[in-house]
Length: 262
Image (tube, rainbow, N blue to C red; front, side):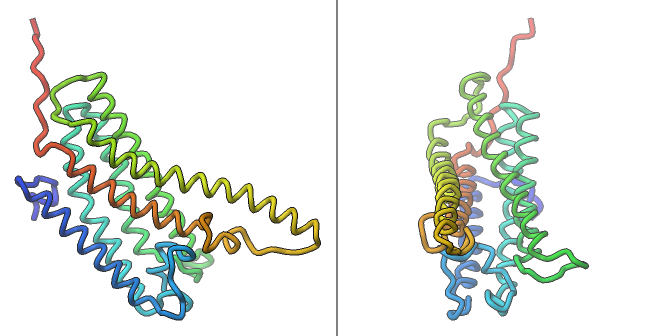
C-alpha cells in the first residue's frame, strides 16, 4: 500500500490501478445520477456536476453523500499518479517537475474539498454559506489543473526541443490528450463568451420593448450556451486527460545523460 501510494507501480500495475480508479469513481457517479430524484430532472444541460452532491431539497437530498465519497476517492487516488508523473519529469527538470507536481497536488486536494463542501445555499458558519466555500475550492481545482496541464506541456516542449536528453518520452503521443482537453476547454470558453455578448443584446432589446427576461443562467439552460453543459464536459475531458497522460509516460524514468567533465 505504501509503495502504491507513493506512485511506485510495478510493470502492468499502473494500468490495473487506473482501470480500477476509473470504474470505481464513475460507478459511484453513475449511482448518484440514477438515484437523483426523477422529479428534479437532472441533466447536464441544466445541472452542474456538483448538483449530484447537493443536499438541497430541490436537488439530491437523500443520496448526496455518495458524491462526496466519489470526489474524495478521486482526490486520494490521484495523489499516487501525481508522484508517478513527478518522477518521470525529473530527468527533464528537477525544479520544473516539482512545480508541476505542486500544481497537480493543488487540484487533487481541491477535488476532495469540492466533495466535502457541497453546493448548498444554507449557512455553514455564521453568514458563510456552503456554496461560497464550494465555489472557492472549485476555483482552486480549475487553477491547479489548468496550470499543471500547461506547465507539463512546457516540460514536454523542453524535453523535445531544449534538453534533448534521453527521457524516453514519446512526445507526439501527448498531442492527442492535449487536443481533446484543450479543444473541449476552448470550445466551452468560446460559447460562454459568446453567450455573454448575446445575452446583453437580448437584455437590451427586451428593455427597449419594456419587457424583462430571465437571468443569464436561466436563459442559457438547455442550449449550446448552457454553463452546466460545458462544466460537465470539461470535467469529463479532465478525467480523460489525466489518466491518458499518465498511461503515455514511460514506466521508468531514463537516467540523465552522463556529461564529459573533462
